[in-house]
Structures are given as C-alpha cells and as structure tokens.
Image 1 (cartoon, rainbow, N blue to C red):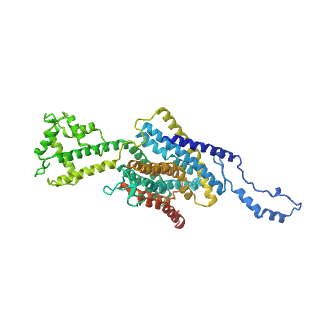
Image 2 (tube, helix red, strand yellow):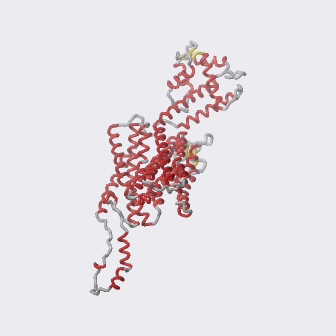
Image 3 (spheres, rainbow, N blue to C red):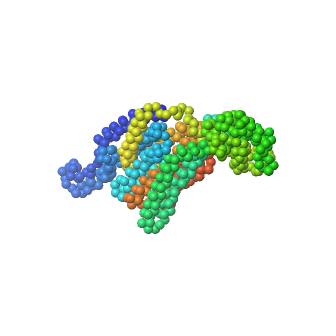
Length: 591
C-alpha cells in the first residue's frame, strides 16, 4: 500500500502521452470518397465503352470499396479505423486506459478501507467499485445506436462477463496456488506458513485457507442462479414469455446482489463473534485438559458422574485464599498458568465468560457446587464434540484430547485477526489527506472508465468486422485483461506471502469478484436486454459460466486445502471454455 501512490503516478506519466497521441490522431482522420467519372483525366474522346471500362477497373472498384468502409468516431472526435492493425492499436490503447482506471479504483478503495474499515464501506461500496469497469463496458455495449446495433454489440458485454468470470477462476486462481504454495503438513493436512522446501510436489505442497473462504465459494456458486433461471425459461415458445424470463432473472439477480451486500456489511461482526466463541471453547478445552492432568484419580466415577472428591482437590488448589469460592483473580491466575501457546486472547474476557458459564447466583464468585455443575456441563460438551462415550475409563482421556484437537482446528480455520508483517494497526497517519487522495483516485478511475468504455467496445466491434473473428472471443480474451489485470497482479503478489491468512484473503476476493460479476454485471446486462427488447441468445456462454462456477465453487466449498495439482484443473478449464463455446455456437449451431 505504501507504493500504491508511486505506482499510480508512474501509470499517470504513461497515460498522459497516450491521451495526447489519441488527440493528435483525430486531426489526421480522413475517409475515401468515391471517384466521379467526370473528374477523371480525359484524352478528349468521349467514348461510353471506354468510360465503362474505366469505371469498372479493379483499381477503381478497390477505391470505391474502401470508400464505403467507413467508421464512426466515438463522441465525434476520438479516432477510429477500419483496418486490422489500427483497431488492434486502439484496443491496446483503450484497454490500457481501462486498466489504468481499474488500478485507480482498486488503490482508492484500499485507502478508503484503511480509514473507514469494513462494514458499509467494505461490504457495499467497495465491491460495487471493483465491478464498475466491467459494468460500464457491459452497459455501453448495449446502449449504442439502434436495436440492431445494440444486438450486435451486446455480445461484447457477454464476452466480457464470461471472460472475467472464467479468467478469475482459472488462470488467476491457478497462478495463486502456484505462487502461494507451501509444504503440506502430513499430520494436519494443511499448509505450513512460509515453508516451501518440497518445491513443485503435486501432493506435498499447496495452499490452505480458512473456513470463511469456503463460505465465499458457496455464495459464488449460488450466484449463478439467475443465469440458470433465465436460460431455463427461454425454453418458452412465446416472445412475451421469453421477455418475462429476462425480467424474472433481473429481479432475482438484484435480490441476490442486495443480500450479498448485506452479508458483506455484517460479515466482520459475524466473524468476530464466531472467533470469540471458538476461543472460549479453546479455553474450556485447555482447562479440562489441565484438570485431567492434575487429577490424582479419574474425573468420572463408575456411574459416569464427576468424582467430587477428585474435583474437590482441584478446587482447593485453585482457591488460593481458602474462602470456598473462586474469584475472578483466582480464575485469571488459572488461565495464565495453563499457558495457551496456540492462541493469543484477552485473559480478562476469557475469565468473564468463564464466570458467566459457572456463576448462577450472579455474585461474580463460583462456589464448589457451581464449579461441579460447570465442569459437568463442559464435559458433556466435550463428549458430544469429541465423539466419546459415558465410559469413565481410559476413553475419558481420548475424547478430551479429541475435543481439544477439533477445537484447535476450528480456531485455525476461522483465521487470524493479527496484522500482517509490515502492516500497522495503529490507525492511518493524516486521515484527512488520505481521504482526499482516495476520493481523487476513485473519481479519476470512475471518469476514465466511463469515458473510454464506449470507444473500447467500438474498437472491439470494428476489429471483429475487419478480421471476421466473432466479438465474443475478442472480448472474452482481451477485455478481462484490461479490467481485471490490476486485481490479478494484486492477488498473485498477495498470495506470494505464503501464509494461510493471505491465501484466505486472496481466494475470498477472487470468489467475491466473480460473485459481483454474476449479480451486478448480470443485472446490468439483463436490464439492457429487457428495456431495449434485445434477444437473449447466449446459451453456450451461460453454460460455460455455470460449468466453471459450479466446478470451482463445489471444489472450494468443502475443502480448505488445495494441493499443487489443483492448479492444473483450473488451468484446463480456460481453453476448455473457449473450445466449448466454439463447438456449441459454430459447429452445433446453438446461436
């Protein structure tokens, strides 16, 4: 983040000359005009046969054909061309400007998040900004010109939507596994932070994520429901029924978008609450293990009840002043003495929750009977989670160990809230200037994206006409590189830190970006189709999106560890998607 401003300043230095070059190009734009026979040089003989031969010569026909192949300048002044090389150049220039806009939006969002934190900003505002370049490109692809023109250009928007989703879940996802891989622990089947000695072992190295990343993958898989609903309802034979299907899909996608944003708003609070609860269970587990180790006999009697004589000795050990009650200070001394090496938590908070569990008289003291009832309650919980039985024999030790191991694993899956190296949790220096800078970045990114989305779509459409390559494939491959490349570079760099926390954040952001594509960008697309009364004819494209999202979503929803071999599955899905669309549309004739 410290280098983000200098990074954008370097981009600004490159962008200004490009904008000047575009303005210079507009001054030399010209078009051919048809030759008039009267303007030709004559030999003085007016011969109709000679005139006809002249006007039908190959040279004259070529010029006449070139004259008819004209292009329309976007905004009336931006350059355009009908040549392959010219349009390729314009795609590169406009694509770079969209990349520049996406970079500014991303950097401004991160600065704003540092100041305002998660919640409304992180859950609602920033996800929308992240999808803004894609949404604008989709919007302008269907707003241009007549209905016929919009129908031909809207495939650019669908290509971008499908290409962004597939690229994020295949090429970028697989690259994050490669750069973020660490050695896999043989006992716990999880990656060991910052240890990469097994190199490119397909099963011995990989990445691990927390449980919240699984939830993000499940939400991503759910987000394809509007695609499925629209596609299934397109089987209706009436035109009005198909039009209604688009409206139903639009309403459903907007409903999922609102639900997802609300979930993002409340997610930090949900995560913190669940983490605190799991830490409390880990304190429970640690105290039970401590009592088991300090007991001179078995904790449970033959009838599966607590052996009160054994527990009495433990109670007396904790009761330092011998008043028959355990105070907060005595319990804190117990918690500190256990030395929980696997977690760092607020000792006072742990003691207050312990007293809340045990104290039924609300006097902030725990007498012996309350201690007995509390320990019994904890043992019942440990038996339920640890898979034990009421047998008071050696299995008591086994299910307590199982409970402790499962609780530690659950705590690890929830992820750490500790700041990364090089990051500070002491607040942002000069928040006023940082807010101003973030606002400028967001404004600049939004303006650039809005200004150059339309000419980029026109350049793609003209390039398609010049090369006879379908616009879908051009937008599928080229446009996601412009709108998602900054996000891709950021994800790969972050994954290269080789930690569970950074890997979790990286993959969660990838799943979140795909979710926003599937709901926000699809909402824009469906709104265009509905209000401009366009034809929904994207069966192959929808099938590709659904296959990739379902495969990767199902794969990531029920596991938190991904060995290195999983990257090849992700990489394979990218060319598979292109081939599938080509076969369905241009071999089997789905379109």
